[in-house]
Picture (tube, rainbow, N blue to C red):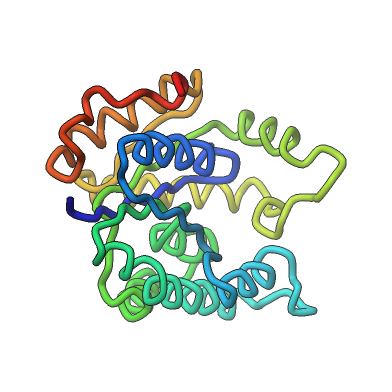
Length: 227
């Protein structure tokens, strides 16, 4: 079986982690080696960078320029040490965010030059791009409700979740522009509905696009909700 690289993108509270886990469970039930990754994160160095980017564990908040460079540094480490080795041995890699997030958040959100960011990303990834990207979309109201449930009285929102609505609007617009540029790779899916319906649409896309990379029993694989 050929390895496949699938990324999950979207704004805060859109359900990326949940639906990535559901897809992983379905693939694993079929006997497909599945590697889960997240950005930033996924290796000790990348997790240290995650802390600096999300919770200022470096002792000071990174400047916007440092923020963009740190994301690229974490991505370079993850690609070299986790993603490429997994793909080369035939595993599927499911990643919670990848290069599209840098373009949406640092490009459209922060206002950095997109061609410059794209050049940085090509250097960091060696030109690696996902075989398919699921862009999960949610309204601002639902996003806020989900974040309130997520954090409750425990850990508070991170640096990006604390950004003003205008920033999140620019990020959302950025993802929409990216989806229009690459409709063959980026699949827009609403999560404003029951979780099982979203998961079913994701699986249908996987089956239709990558049947050659799935075991023959793919059609009879149990859904995550049935296992």
